[in-house]
Image 1 (cartoon, protein in one colour):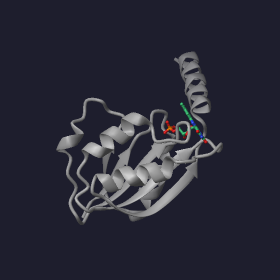
Image 2: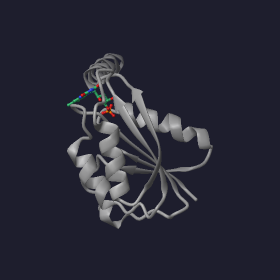
Image 3: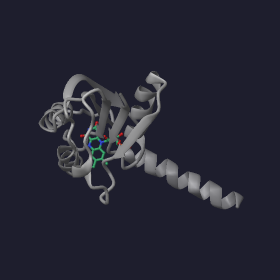
Image 4: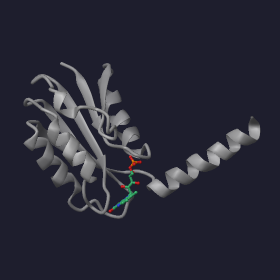
Length: 139
Ligand SMILES: Cc1cc2nc3c(=O)[nH]c(=O)nc-3n(C[C@H](O)[C@H](O)[C@H](O)COP(=O)(O)O)c2cc1C
């Protein structure tokens, strides 16, 4: 059995949430990055005994389109999964149900759903930029 993260996280908030969840197992975690356009997702096949955490941000109350497309290429092979939707405290609307549907379509057994709030992307980008400015000042 392996613990597997399948995550789409352009600005890191969703990744943080996935890390918090999988850290509870105290086991090594395999990470599959749904943001990577160079990965051949159709070559990824989980074992039935694996446990997956599939996490995406909510964009306009939906799952970001590339994340759905790439997730649907992966073969879940009846692995158990928790669907996680991360949003900016407006509303996540259809994100969690859309993610669960896509996971089931890929052969996962969805056993739980989590919605978590993270800093909105603009705040994360602003923070990253001001951090870079600070780093430049001290170089
Ligand atoms: C294009 C875009 C659309 C978003 N739409 C929503 C939304 O509908 N509801 C909401 O609560 N947050 C929304 N957010 C905020 C993100 O869901 C939130 O910042 C999330 O943590 C970003 O994940 P990431 O840091 O993993 O990229 C949106 C952010 C972006 C960039």
